Amino acid sequence: MDRLKALSVFKAVADNGSFVAAASALDISCGAASRTVQELETLLGVRLLNRTTRRLALTAVGEDVLHRAGGLLQSYDELATIGRASASEPAGVIRMAAPAMFARHYLGPSLAAFRARYPKVQVDLQLCEGPVNVVLEDVDVALCLPEDLRLTQIARPLASAEVGVYAAPSYLARKGEPTHPSQLVEHDCLTSKAVRAGTDWSFEHLDSGDPYTVGVKGALHANQIEVLADAAAHGAGIVMLPAFMAQAAVAQRRLQRILPGWRAAPLSLQLTYTSRRNQPMSVRKLIEHLVETLGTAHEDSSVPVPRFADEARSIDITGRAGQAARWIVQQAPVPQQLAPA
Image (cartoon, rainbow, N blue to C red):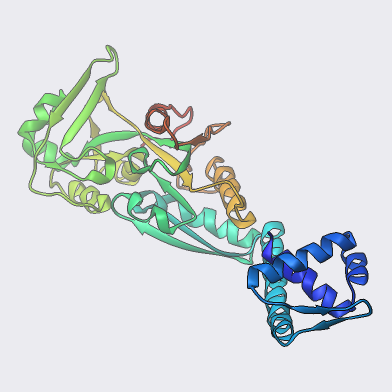
């Protein structure tokens, strides 16, 4: 039994003074109205109406229930109004999380444009230096790396960022420039799990496609990749970075890319959320906006904007096929990449 519906039928009977008038007002049969009130009385374990052949009268308990039901139904109507407004007009607070290294370069202009388009929406953005998965349960939308995904999340690949290995000219003049990944063991390498590599750096030869993984070491490890990029630019060692983060330092000749015959696996950025069901319009609009704005290069921007796949694929990472689906997400190539340095 729909309890709210039962209360609304009971209130209509009490307000109209008869089952016939209540049924007419609610556009239901008189028998359905009578049965609904009887079921409500059975549920509550009390008599709500005294019935005679001539009139209906509320019992003392019925009067109390009617008073409380009025407030409850009014509150429900107000909630329904809020829900309809949320479904038809973007409004309210969206909780969002993203990797700090990406957000600092790209999210500011995109979110500013979103707020200008939808002024009734507020965005609460959490920036994560480490894995984004520690906050996925507390947000509506997240940008994350494939390894941060959970089986309960829906994910769509958005962008692919080229990754390279960089060092300052002063460091290379002092230590020499490696020409093969195996020579990295002889160098000071700056490590961070923010770019997924940690201390195991994997490469693929550009011509032969042969893979090579080397265990690197160094005296500086951080969860904040910008610190390592700056340290490398000051001659501290060799660092693995997304190309977009190294672009400015390369242009200023503070960093140079090494191992030109080898490539590291790109970083794949995923857009993830918990469910499509009953998703607020504000969240849907933000998802659409991120795809739109982060998938289009702006001519007036000095910072390269990530290029998105024309048709981003959506994968529901749930059920028995979850592990396989996650592997597909991690392996799926994205045709367009962030502009390299």
